[in-house]
Length: 79
Image (tube, rainbow, N blue to C red; front, side, top):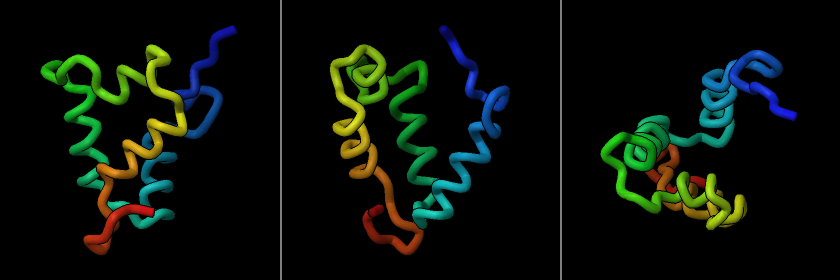
């Protein structure tokens, strides 16, 4: 079974991300910068997102790698 979570069955993805960044006091620019680096057409092979999608990286490991890239809104590391 396939589900479309891009605002069809759930709230729009953007709204969920904005709420998460605000709730956890994460600098949105650090999140955007990380996603662009990992998902752009020029991104190298083996980015954490690609490894997550292929099962080479477990979700918990991905969370740790992503958290290391994020910056708190007050110039501190994200929680």
